[in-house]
Length: 234
Image (cartoon, rainbow, N blue to C red; front, top):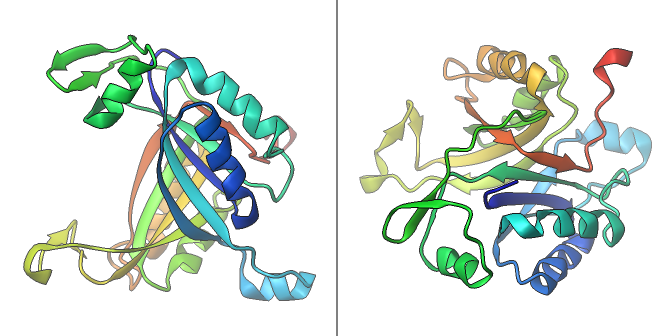
């Protein structure tokens, strides 16, 4: 990997401090940490005698020379490959500015060209085995979105509560009101399944439904903690 990466780590809340400690030891700034929840339905949890586990999603900017050390740390210290311990994904970054850019320069990262002052950019293209699908839907409709995604092979997702910030409380984005309560659903899936999952979400929970979901995807450079079946065995 020749460019900084965005880390998205989703772990039980009891393990989130370990993610932060690992990043601090590697001098990686933790940009944001937010509470979230999984998509297992209450009825299923009750049937299995399980409680819903509180989770946290952590976002960080990772210099390219530290990605391997970070992934090794997530595997050895947090055991993120064990079922129930979470998932982490690295997303390629195209540009960076502000104090995070200065931080990377201090760590010796010199892999990106500088198109303008205070901004670095990379046009590196790479094939990725996974994609991150993000669906933004009206509050209370993520079960419908996840049901549509599971029908096309998605195994699970993570929900973050959100609220829009439209000017004068009237602005809209793709006919989605920005001021009402929203939920963002993050789903990591195989790249080959991405288009079918997105089409299913739009068909069953899109703008024409009460969910009013909009969907977009981002490439994933690498992921750990996924437990997806081998497509050759299906």
